[in-house]
Length: 361
Image 1: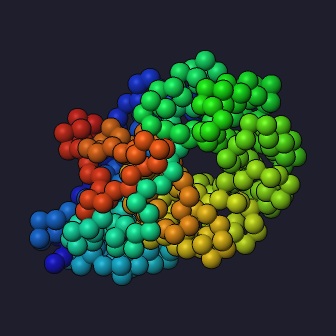
Image 2 (image 1 turned 90 degrees about the vertical axis):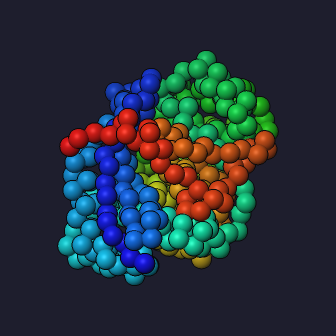
């Protein structure tokens, strides 16, 4: 059995209404280069690279198609990816190339699992059937208190019992929003706060102490992501859990954080890890240091990976990719996501939607 073709399909789908990630920063469209590996047995594997508002879509498409000579005519084994990874490291070890490579690795893992007739989690060795899940898509820094309450009510009706709020680092603005969301969800639900790298070490410590009465589950990315020593200082000074790692590239970057004790929870990003292989390496690094592992976005694929991670603690639910998938995350009524068991990722592209959103480059 061999890979016969690498296909790409660029897509761009609207977010209606646009998502206000931060003042002056609107997410109007999600954009992907869907990556498909076909085989001579009629089974295909699916992966993707994601970008905001169409940025670099053509460049990603060209980069991914450039991997074809490394995989076509070969079996979809782990050493197939290793060959591509070594090529990237030698020729272009940039963050961009790592992200492009992630799409290929996603498709390889999906393909191997589909050929075996099992979920990706079974290839790893599943440790979890469910995981606590938090709603991450409705609580941006641009959302005022009244809208936070409405969004929380709608999320709770869906079965969510944990919510992540973006804050801006100005307590005059942040405290009313944190208070509004805590009052809306009650004392028994989990409330996570994300500073999105907006603070300094001293201010983050001050903010962390000010938010103690609200019982945060964690405080995320308090300072610029490269400042691991600053993160470590904050983690040592506060009782609240510090989560970070979503902006870091490759498992080596996560390992550096762990050595410096920069976070109490790491949350590798599947794309920035270079795909599932790097994601699982990062999770193993965290396990060796006794640190829990979550994910950043890519819910549809991260769910199956975290099922096979012994030290997994939370699944981040982000709706950004839902327009191109057939399936949806299932909740069990107790604030947990039911992790997928269907072959491959357990999530497949909705080809009717893909045709609707396909773009020419």
